[in-house]
Amino acid sequence: MNIIPAIEQMHREMTEWRHRIHMYPETAFEEFKTADFVAEKLESFGIEVHRGLAKTGVVGTLKCGNGNRAIGLRADMDALDLQELNEFEHRSRIDGKMHGCGHDGHTVMLLGAAKYLAESRNFDGTVRFIFQPAEENVAGGRVMIQDGLFDLFPVDSVYGMHNMPGFEVGEFAVRKGPLMASADFFEARVIGVGGHGAFPHRAVDPVLVAAEVIGAWQQIVSRNVDPLQAAVITVAQIHGGHTTNVIPEDVVMSGTTRAFDPRVQGLIETRMEQILKGICDAYGATCEFTYDRRYAPTINTPDETDEAIATAIELVGEDKVDPDVAPVMGAEDFSWMLQERPGCYLMIANGAGEGSCHIHNPNYDFNDQILPLGASYWARLTERILAKDAA
Image (cartoon, rainbow, N blue to C red; front, side, top):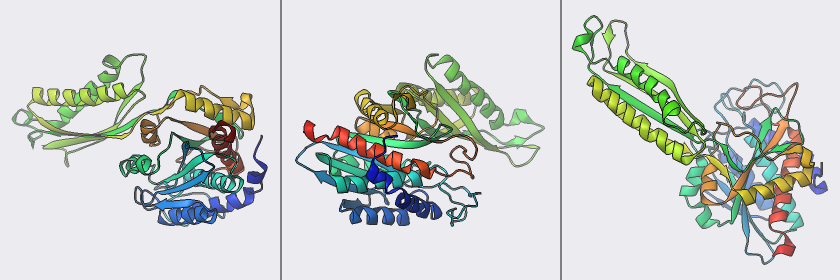
């Protein structure tokens, strides 16, 4: 691997940073200590720091030369509400919270690149180091956009990276176009007329209506969505009633939907509400429906993905870079940044084999071995896009 020597020399220091962040995980919009740590490091590197976007977000700005071009490099900082089961020394010290998705590693890889770039200054233009809160569940990336991220800190393109367990260290994976799906969340309330379970004709049974709705919703994917497209509608919760001989007044259903195409995303929302209202009308019930488009599809733009692929190949060789990895139905709020600016979201292998496990697992841990490689990717990407001879 063609890791930058100066970054390789920082390996032990970066590992110490990562372990410190891992021991004190913070969840959505509560990343105060993590943000303090990030801001202090950036300032010590001589990088201009801005704080407060999306409550705990941190943006570092580093300018070099006279170039007018600017790029954004983004890392997420938040942890999960999950009890860690690891027993190593740097395990979580906060009960019920852990860095089970590797955001501690993402933060440190970008910090390592920031330190190197501030020292080497081998580029011409502006780099925005975007440290984002609340990626898990509440889409802090969307909030940063709403708070004016790219108005306050303009960039021509933006890039993100996530670790990928199950693949050998030294590998990268990416694709042009849709890489990850949208993640929308819904709640539907079916309101009937309660009554005695022995006299259903005197009631309007919301349990029966809800069952009809759930079955009909599944036909949206099979009969409304283009068979060459992909979509998921999952009813994950259903609540109604409190005893065995009473027909309840209402039933509440909630869940998630996924799609790669924004048009399919819109179709799902429209048809779900139409079907809910239609079935409720047919049975004499009423309904309420809320639909939250929380995560947009993550769609990489062609030119920026080419830059990411070329950078990864420079680091590990063509045979270690998959330029057409299969898309997944998981979601990522970096998608909101990609809706505002062209860019690319890339996967870096976290390791495979004994001792490795998937993210969101209580035994997961970010692989410190890849810290210099990830930081080198950010640094080489910056030097490639903001090359001095291209100014």
